[in-house]
Amino acid sequence: MAKRGGFPGGGMPGNMANLMKQAQKMQKQMEDVTKELEEKEMTATAGGGVVEVTVSGKREVTKVKIDPEAVDPDDVEMLEDLIMAATNEAMRQIEEYSQQKMGKITGGIGGGMGLF
Image (cartoon, rainbow, N blue to C red; front, top):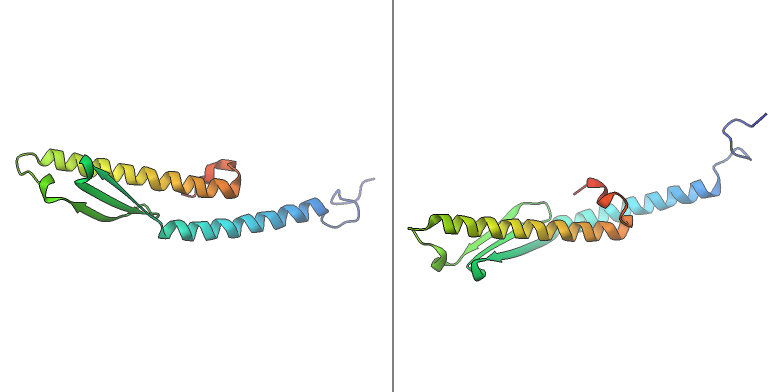
């Protein structure tokens, strides 16, 4: 008849204890990286630099800079497109950076586990 719990000696096996320590270490690293990412900013430009958008690691636009030469009252749509393009590029950059940082911790398991 097998002992209750299924592990010889009745205690947590060494491998399980190591796994728990590794999980706790990974959790701490993820918390540190999450804090770092929240403080990170990425800036992208469009239209040869006439529009510049900065996005934080929290996925918030923190700055928009528009060169006066980009402001044409007869072509507002062009300016709107430039702002959208720069914003999308900055968002893509922050996402890529987040995935790289989390991938170093998780080893690619779950792609950062969907936390960002």
